[in-house]
Length: 377
Image (cartoon, rainbow, N blue to C red):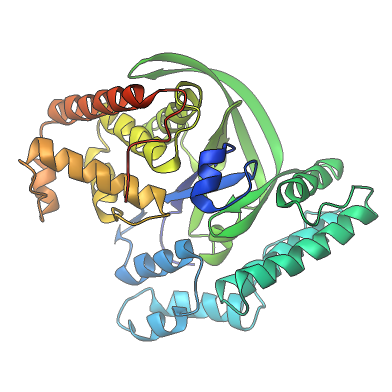
């Protein structure tokens, strides 16, 4: 493993039809949206090779990974990435540690998802073919365990997968982290109520603290543990992977509580809002409160910005950076990150708050309860 701190990701779980239109899923599919936050090596920045590899991971396509590694032999992470990729995806000898899954059927299902992730990431066959095979096999197993057949209904099938793990004594989250089907498995879950202060008021939210994970999902699997979900929001509360946070840190308070808390509040204020607008609002909320982590947060938004369709997080980053540039630099985005660092902190706070208020006004004009958002690629 590299000498790199875990690259944290956050996932937001959505369950509303506009997002299903965005990703082409049925109206009640459980969709997981992924964003990568700032990653720092213990002795410096994550290398360009690791960043490029992560981009492949998050696109769900590792078919060009070998070429990427071989074209960057001077990068000090090349050997680590090459060795891990060889054992996990070529030799297939490196796998999830499923030894704590005492249930044979739970272990069988976890192994099926793992095999599917490998083939899908390497694009051995089309996603449609691989998922058709996976769903048929899962359905057969679930029927044997007393569940009704749901092979033609992805939503119900994945709900049955989660129910199977609960039946066997584990917690599980399935759904889709675009572009792949997801499976996270853990064994401990504690719920606490928090009062989360946001720019428009204080919200009382149930926060579920999850621990003792067996599977962190496909992006963690594909990145050899260098990436991991930090948490997600649902309409009933927030879900935090507490092993990945110092619960007294600013990062936890911003990137989890306030970011996910903004989603929780917006699910009620703007029930049809699509992913890019939701993420834009959550990122501005972080910037409205950030203190010592300001430079790293801004650098992440800048480096991860991309105005492309069907990628809500990079798109939201692009809008954050673009709108801040309009306000702070007369519309010209600085090419030097140090220029951003020269912006007074209170100016950054007030500008982020102003942009958030303007976004509220635009959504309200469109109709708060029906608008799908104003951000476009």
